[in-house]
Length: 224
Image (cartoon, rainbow, N blue to C red; front, side, top):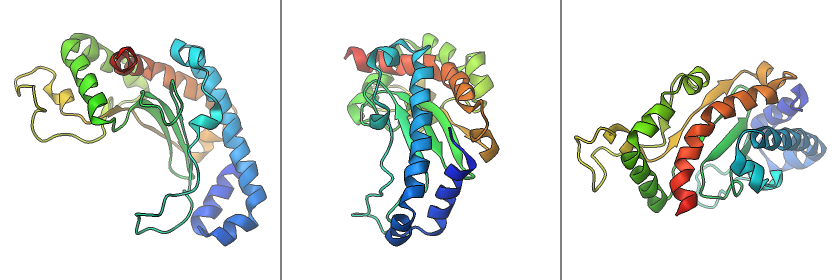
């Protein structure tokens, strides 16, 4: 379970993002990571209760959690650690090309949602084809009452093209969505929410609402 101590470690890391501080607080990191790992284990279980793909794949929670170490090789920001924990639950874990469910834990900036964020060009092409061919189904899915109740902003784009993508006309009824470079939902939480006893159950309700969107996005990818 995520506790105030979990957030305290991340807050301390944000204020002291150095290898020296991290090593001197290694036990605190191990405890905080353990809290987050336990939460991800529960996330996989909850998602498996309504998503048959996840239930069948049973991804290893470790394969869903991003490393806390930053890749600083090509970055001007040389701080060595990320200041939050992040997990992505999908058919093949965090490195798989499929749409899935995510959770980011960070003091004052935790959020969760689901979708397909910045897919590779060939996967984006497959997704656009599915939206174009099954637009009525897509529109019904992304305007569902259950989805908008949990994500009032609806589907967000992870980037957009200025002009219609190649092969699509501006008059296409789906053109607004076809310009998207990715499709995801997002919802933020206050610290008191993520440490509440029923937080995982709340995540389950949120993920259940976005499940139909993920199923649609993955339909052309998994079958291809």
